[in-house]
Length: 214
Length: 279
Image (cartoon, rainbow over all chains, first blue to last red; front, side):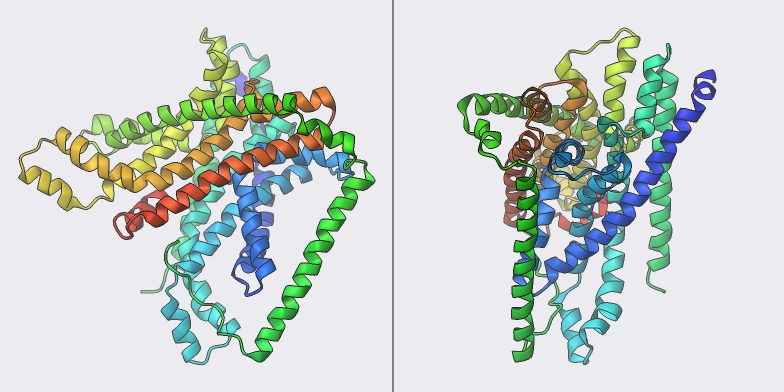
C-alpha cells in the first residue's frame, strides 16, 4: 500500500492532468468537428475539399507525429505556446477528424426520403436540420462518438512522450524509482479502466435521454 | 458509405447559385490567404531557405528514411500477423459455449481495449525487466501493440462471425459437419472476407501505433526523424517529411479499405457488424 501513499501527490496530479486534457480536448475537438463536418456537407466546393483534406490529413498521420510537429517543429517558425495548451490542440485536432467522420456518417444514416419529405412539407433549411436531420443523426452518432471518446482518453497517454506530466508520465516516473513497480502499474491500469467506464456510462445515459419516446 | 446521404439542400435557384459562387470565391481567397500566411511564417523564420530543404533531395537521406520506413513496415507486419492470429482465437473463445473459456477471453478483451498502448509499452520497458524478463528491442514494441490490437481485432472478428447468416451454420450442420469443421470450412472463410475492409483500416491503426517506437528507441520512421533532427537541427523539415511519408502510406491503405468496402456486396454483414463494433 505504501507504493501508492508514497506517490499519492504525483499520481493524483497526473490523474488531474489526464482528466483535464481529456475534457478540454473533447470540448475543443467537438467544436472543430462540427465546423469541419459543416464544411464537408456544404454546397461550396473549396469548403468540401478543405473538410475532406482535414479529415484525411489528421486521420492518416499518427498522433505522436502531430505532437512532435506541434511541440518541436512549430517553435521553429515562431509558433510556440505552453506545453499543456499545445498538447491539447494537437490531441483535439487529431480526435476531431474522427468525430467529424462520425458526424458525417450519422447524417448519412438518414434516408434521402426524410429530407425530401421535409422539403415537400415546406420546411426551410433550419427547420429541416432542427426537426428532422439532427434528432435522428444525433442518436445514430452517439455510440461511435462514445467509442472515439474512450480512444481520446487512451490517446492522451501519448503526451507523456513529449513531456506533459499526465497520469502515464507520472506512472513512468514512479516506476523508475520504485523497487517493486508492478502494483503501481496495475493501479494505473485500473484508473484508466475506471475513467473509460465513466465515459461509457455518461454516453449510455445520454443515449437513454435521446432515445425516442415510446 | 455506399448509400448516398440525404440531400440537405434543395437544388439551388438563380439566387442560390449566385450565393454559392460568391461563397466559393470567398473561400478560395481565404484559403489562399491562409496558405500565404503560413508560407510567410516559414519564410520570415528562414525555414524556406534552399539549404534547409536541399538535404531532403539527396540519396543518402532517402536511404536513411527508407530504412526507417522498412522498420515501420516490419514492425507493423509482425504486429498485424500476431494480432490477427490472437484476435481470431480470442473471438472464437468469446463465442465459446464453455464459460471457462468465454469469461477470461471477454475479460481480456475489455481490459486490453481500454489500456493505453503507451502504458503497456512502459510495462514492457521498465516493469518486466525488473522481474527478469527483458524482451529484445523489436518485441518491446510489438508485444504491447499486439496485446492492444488483438483485443480490438477480436471485436471485429467476433462481429464478422456473429454477423454471418445463421443459415450457413445450419446448412453445415444439416450436412453432418462437425462444429470445428463448420467453423474452419464454412464460417471463418466468409467471416474473414466480410471483415476484410475493417481489417485494412485496422492496419492503418497499426502503422500509426508503430510510431510508439519512439518510446522504446526502435528505429522506425518517427524515431528516425527524431535522430535525424537531433543530428542536422532541421526540426520542422524532418518532422514534416516523415509526416508526409506516413500520410502517403496510410492514405493508400485507407483508399484500399474504402475500395474493398465498396466492392463488397452490400447487406451481407454491414449492419450487424457495425452494431458490434461500436459496443
